[in-house]
Picture: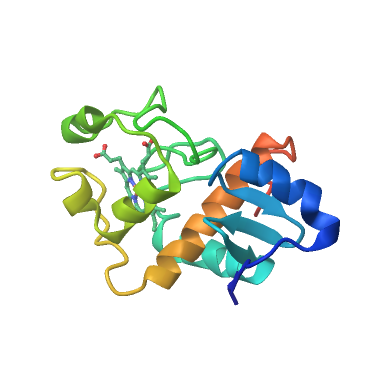
Length: 156
Ligand code: HEC
């Protein structure tokens, strides 16, 4: 279940200060990940992983391998269309944005609305913002764990 973080617990004050200093950037916290002030538990991330398995992994890898789509390691903060050996579509390359949480939310809600003409053949999470956010929590936790040096399989 998601729990909104209303106040920083005392032992975590130092961690909270760091996060505050970094603005709204997501960060890992014991047992989960905080995104825009919302705590996603290990259970949420696990649910996100199973959604990824069902709805994304037939095309995307998280193992730095391109299958039917570019790999998604380190997607948080990654410039779009930056996997060097992937042939992105023209409209997608023309977008030129960066994968913030906000952009991931808009993209995964309805890819064809966000970047008309994209070759990502996925209808989007039109009715379930919760599933969308849990798959994003999984991808973000994976990115942050990799960044922290936990290895390529971190967050799996
Ligand atoms: C049917 C295959 C397919 C499915 C399913 C799919 N994608 Fe994609 N995805 C693509 C393709 C192809 C692109 C490149 C789009 C282009 O070039 O227009 C892409 C691009 C992306 C990008 C941008 C990558 C970059 O390098 O900038 C993200 C992020 C992404 N997909 C996330 C997801 C997530 C999360 C899911 C599951 C909820 C998903 N995709 C489901 C095929 C797919």
